[in-house]
Amino acid sequence: MIAIGCDHAGVEMKKAVIEALSGKGFNFKDMGTDGQPCDYPVVAKAVCDEVTSGNCEKGILICGTGIGMSMAANKVRGIRAALCSDSFSAKFTRLHNDANVMCMGARVLGNGLAAELAEIFLTTGFEGGRHQRRIDLITDIENNNL
Image 1 (spheres, one colour):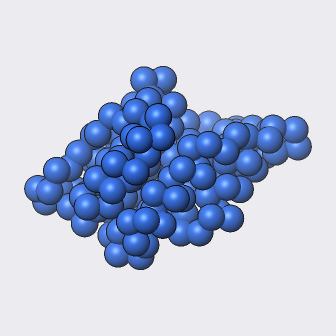
Image 2: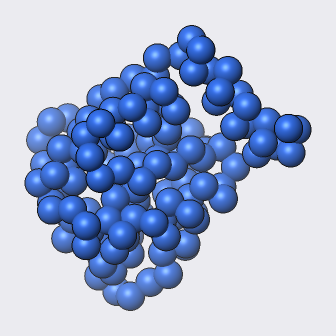
Image 3: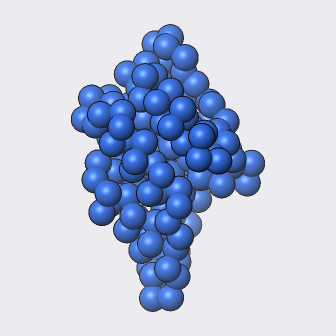
């Protein structure tokens, strides 16, 4: 299960990503919004809570630029959110950073590219190895141990 959410700027992109990837076997838990104006940090927290609780494997967040969502998401302990606007970043944030939430900007990307990037993000695994040490360092920073 993938948690997905957006603010009012990202409604159409969220629908497009769900439609494109549901047909490829992905299941989504839609955390809103359906079009009503909302505060993106509230949606970011809802999606991130689904990820950190283990209810959902990963999360996708969409706002106008993706920047606000990524800033809010990265305040949640246990979340490694990455703003992605190209396939290289979508792939390597999983391979090297073990990101568990991807953020995108609806005013930056087209819906087709967004669905493509989401698929890359959701199907790419974490390499581990030397990268795990760096993830552990990020966790140490998060826990004020570094």
